[in-house]
Image 1 (tube, rainbow, N blue to C red):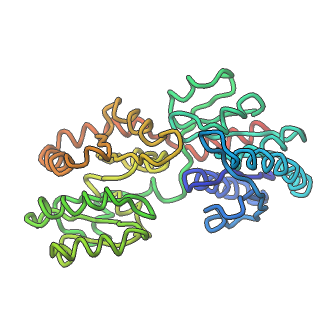
Image 2: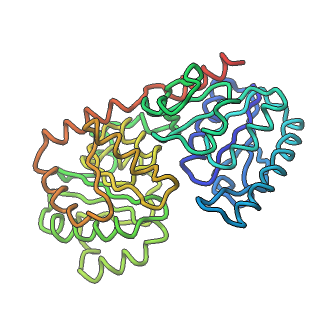
Image 3: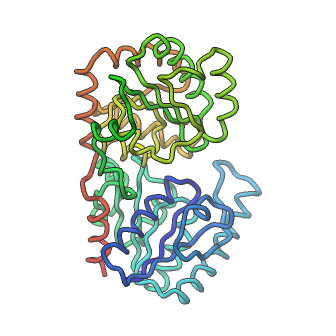
Length: 361
């Protein structure tokens, strides 16, 4: 099987494609995988498959000269993608959304290559919606995403493909391996770069709840961009030397830390939500207001409606200390959240998607 992957702009688009590439190679070792990347996208540092770069950019929400440039780039990118397809000769194209997916799928369709799209978010992105008519299959993470498509016979709920490891952790075993002795564990993360408002809230939680309770371990991933500022804020209040606070700009073993936690405070990206669902975590979701189409808020609302998480908007983060305290004091509430978010986990999503690709060929 020769598969051409595409999808860029954010790790939320790239990681599912990588996960599927790895799954294909595990199930069919003689397969060939390549990835169409943007010139300066995050995928260039994440992808280890053969890479084919294209010059393409996204569209702004209003009419602008930048949008005109983007249109011309898309036309040129489609022609470049035809050259890539003729060279690599894929049997199938797998795209995970974002503006980088559009020219690859269009070129593949015009050259008679099978195409499959995957949508992680509740509300499908612009590229996936525009490609609905020509795609052979559309795979979704959320059941309610199906309502946005006209060609429902193409749409299959598979869940999100996760990179290896997330579903292999046990809470007690993780705590033992990490040397955690505290009764309660809270994990707080705003993503790999960090989130200023979440980090400010972390300071308040530590100062008001963790400092005075040695039974609570607070694991805090500040993000690389926010490390210095967060370190300064914690030092100002004398919080950086507490034995029950683990603080780092980035934890490479985040899935294990997540599995050890009782409560997770995080953003609401689709991949993060899939990990939380797979690990059955009681979660407080703080959606980023700075993503396209307000995807994170819509994702968090879907989980909250089902009783699977507590959502707090950034504008109401002053409530978070009370929310964390109430959750810590209520094991029953934690259990309800764990049971309900677990319903969003699709077991064997990677294998299911692999089977879709295999059967389509």
